[in-house]
Picture 1 (cartoon, rainbow, N blue to C red):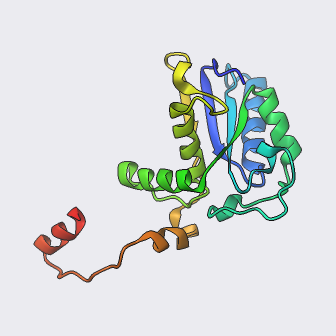
Picture 2: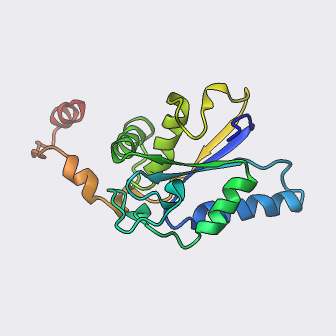
Length: 184
């Protein structure tokens, strides 16, 4: 894919409805002169559930990101069209990358998302750091706009994050004890 576009929209992809709908909206805005250019659409699937990326149905999709654990997306063809028309790409990220992105968002931005939502952030990091990403951001235009859509709150799928938590210990309800607990 060409990665010399000025604008990029990164999304998690499961059934592919979001990437399809956003692309339709961008085209409609352009047609009605509400915008002047279109972004490249970059979709990210989990490696174990990436039928569009691998271009084949996945009989038993596997990923901890339950909302994108789809083996045969309902909007596959429309998503493929959005990717091609926008000069975008589809890529896959590992479950570990998804978990790392979920943790990063919570720690650095105060945003708690479900694992599937973190796929777009994992994809962003991959584009920034990896030469084998479907699109490398290492040589994009200055002043490029990059938007990452995160679609679901962490409480939508809390089991993964709960499984990673260390044992919770009760604390006294004093300012000093709460500060000590937060600093751990």
